Structure formats: structure tokens, C-alpha cells
Length: 108
Image 1 (cartoon, rainbow, N blue to C red):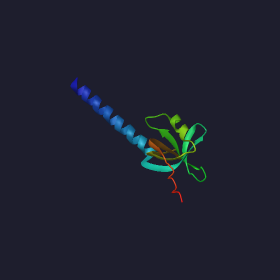
Image 2 (image 1 turned 60 degrees about the vertical axis):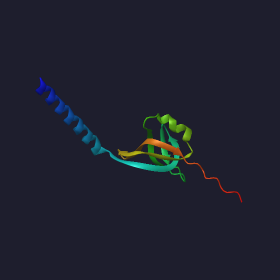
Image 3 (image 1 turned 90 degrees about the horizontal axis):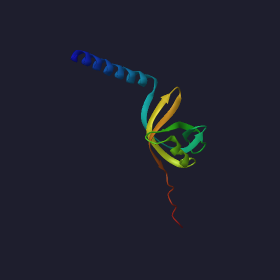
Image 4 (image 1 turned 45 degrees about the horizontal axis):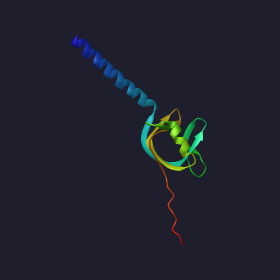
């Protein structure tokens, strides 16, 4: 019985590691901080270039709903997370979002 449990454990562990390796082959991941403006494209929220609203990456919340991005549409923000490229589409799995406060200009 112990041999069976040990063999089953090793098989499951190998299967999990193999699945993780397979998942990693198709997607490239890196931690990134991106500054831009949040925009909505269809059902997706994206981080876009502030000058021309050209999308940089699709945003996915980690630990919070994607709908949370709605209140930041049009707002300059800094987002930090894991950037994944899947099927020629960049996805940023956002762990932290902070709006960029404009620095008050000194009065003359």
C-alpha cells in the first residue's frame, strides 16, 4: 500500500511539473511597471500611451475584479504586475495600481 501511495505521489508531482513546463513554453512572463492611461476597448481595460491612447497591454486584476479599472479610465496611472505574451497579445496581470497625482505648480 505504501509503495502504491508513493508511486502515485511521484506520478502526480511529475505530471504537475510537466504541465507547468508546458504552460511556460507558450507564454513569456516578466515583471513590469508601466505608466500610462487606462482606456476601455470593448470588454477589456488596457493601459495605453498617454499621447495617442495606443494600447500597450490588456489589464487583468490579480486579487481584484477587472471592473475596478473602470474608475481609472482616462486617469494617468502606474501599474505593476506580470506581463505575459499569449498568442501575440500582451496581458498585464496587475498586482498594484496607483494614480499619478499631478505635482502642484508653484505660484509666481
